[in-house]
Length: 409
Image 1 (tube, one colour):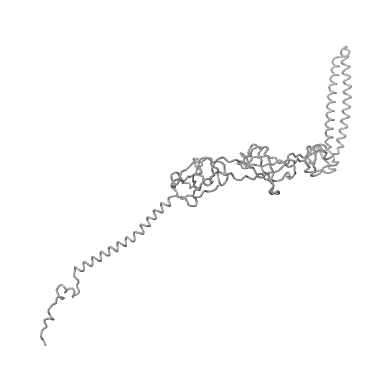
Image 2 (image 1 turned 30 degrees about the vertical axis):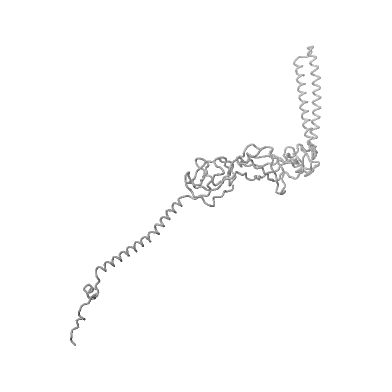
């Protein structure tokens, strides 16, 4: 019962010295080092991957920032193609219609209006009687002047007879030479007196003729300011009638300075009135003032229009359309494409590579939104619109897609 079991105390292969440590819970140094190295290696790899994973977005962001900065450093511009210069529509200018001839009729004799024979709108001929003025005082003065003329003529005749007789007596030395000279001088005085009296009679006769108020030329009565019994006085500026010749009318237009070169004598313009829509009249340029008025920068231009049918009324407001002047060979350029610098007006041209070239141009007429260019660019050029102030030759620019189509002037 107490026999000792050897098999239970004999150490087995599992309880070898090398295995005792494992059994006892203490790992061996070789196994531990291998596992630590593996863990370290995996950790390093993971850390490296984490670092790479963190640096790649930054690197990409930096590259994108550089590319964006470089892209933003290149200015973006819009360009337009050029076209042949086209003249703007003919300009419509305000005009005033006036009679070809017009005259106010003033009294030349003082008296009372006896009667008037014409009224507003009456067509009269040259020399036609318009009114009569009763001039009793003038008639009396004329009668007195005629009597005075007869008196001085009688005195002249007597002086003539006396001077002739004394001249005969002087030949026989019957009278003194001094007395004969006095008689001759008295005759000259009487002759001068007669001439003065005759001049006064002629003056009064002419004034008496002005009692008949007549038309100075053929026309129409456009104003009557007289009635029977009115007292009119010569030289006071009182107007009796106004006569106007309206078979032809004068048209006065103030042409702006920019259009003056296109105004030529005998050129034809179209005249129209708002109260006659769709109807035009031909007006011919007859003369110009030949100078620009400094206050308005316009030139007064006179035209004539036929009004034999009396369709137009003098004093009316009208509009005149001058034909567009011939346009010189050139191209049309948008006004906002110009650069004004010390070298003069310039434009920026862009080639196929986006390189900028500044080109000086010679300008023609200014049509507002477009400007005529006589020299410096061609129809094949692409011009920058709204160029920046910093634009210089050799600069690289980016062209907007929307600006590739040609802009019409």
